[in-house]
Length: 264
Length: 264
Image (tube, rainbow over all chains, first blue to last red):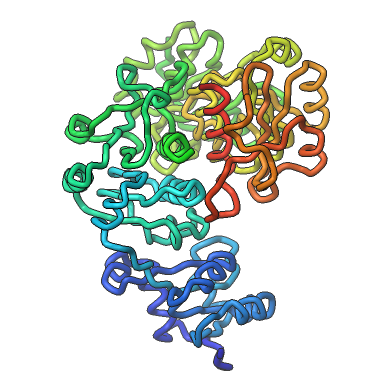
C-alpha cells in the first residue's frame, strides 16, 4: 500500500498540496478538502469511508505507528513517507506526531432536510475564536446536537478548529452560511423556534425555556454578542442567570450550558 | 498622585519587580502578589480596596486611559509612567494596552470556615491547562460557586490564568493545596459529599445527582481524568451522559455543565 520512496523535497506535489490546504481557506473551499494532523484524528478519519484522500507520515512516525495506521486503512489509499525534515515543515503544532491527513469535508444532507426533522440545533453567529469553535463542536458531538449552523463565523475546517474539535469535526453535521438573517428565516420557515442567548437580566432565564424538539439556540460573537436585529427577530431572548461577577460567560461555555439544557 | 518622571530604564526596581512577579511562581508565592495586564482587569482591581500595590502605565496608555485610571484609584497608590519601549518589555500579550498592575492575592477566610458553610464547591484535581483554569474560574464566578478548591493543578495566579479569568480571579474564593487526598478528607470531615466527574457509562448520570448544599464536584486532569484512588474515595462517581462521539468533554466544559447543575 505504501510506496517505499521517502519524500525529501519540499517541492514535491503532495507536500505542496498539503501546505496549500493548510494555509489557504480558498483552496479548502474550492477542493472540499482539509488537513488534519496527529495520530488520533488520522485514525478517526481513516475509519470513515472515503474521508482520507492522502496520508503523509514521517519516517519516525511510521516506525512508531505504521502498524496501526496500516490496519486502519480501509481502502487502497496511498500513504506517503516523508523525511522528518519535511514533516517539520508541514507541522502546525510544536511537538508534531509526524502524521498528516488530507481529508474530504464530510458530505451533509441538504440543510432543508436537516431542519425538516424538527431537531435540536445550535447556531453560531459571528463566533470568531477557533478554540471556542472547536470546543463547541466537540461538545455538540458529545451531547448529540442534530446540527451546528454557523453564520459569519470563523471557518470550521481551518487547522486550528479541526485540532480543537479532537475529531468531532468529522462527525457533527455543520453548515456554514454567510448571512445570519437568511438562516433565521430558514429556521422560521421550518417552524424551528430560535432562542437568542443574551447576557441581559430581563431575558427569559434558561431553566424556564422549554428547549425541546424544534429548537435552535443562538450564540453570538465573543466580544459583541448577537446583533440587535437577530435578537429582535428570534422568538425568545434567553439568558443564563448569573450571580454578579463577570458581565458574561465565555461564548463556548454559554453554548455548552445551553446545549446541555436542550439535549438532556 | 502620579509622578511626572517617565521610567525609561529596564533596571528600574519597579520594572524589575514586575518582571519577577510575571515570570517567577516562587516570587508570587513568597510575596503574595501577582501581575495583571490590561485596562479592564486593572479597573476591576482598582475598585477593590488594598488590591493594587502598584500601577505601571505607558505614556500612550496614560494619554488614552489616564482619566479613568485616576478616577478608579481609591487609595493613594502610586502610578508609575513608563516609556512605551519599557511597556513592551513588560507585556505578556501581543497587542498590549500598556497597563500593568501589581496586585495582592486576595485574602480568603480559612478553608475550614468556608467548608463549614455547607456550600457548593468545585474541586480541580491536577488540571493543567491555564486556559481551562481561567474559563472555569470565570464560570464559577458567574454561577456563584462558593469556592474553587485546587489540588496539584496549574497555578491560579500565573499571568495566563489571570488573563483567562477576565477578572474573576479577584472575586472567586480559590484555595490551592498540594495534595488531593488531604483535601478529600477535609471535605469528608466537613460532611461535604464529593462527586467525581468521570467519563464512564456505569457512573450515575449527572441529572440523577442531587448536587445541593454540601456538595463538591471533582474535575480531573485533561488527559488522564481523576486518579483512581480519588474516584474510589468520593461518595459518588458521576457522569455527563454522552451520545457517542468523543470519549469525553473538554475539562472546562465538563466543569461548567456540572457547576450549572449544582447552582441552578
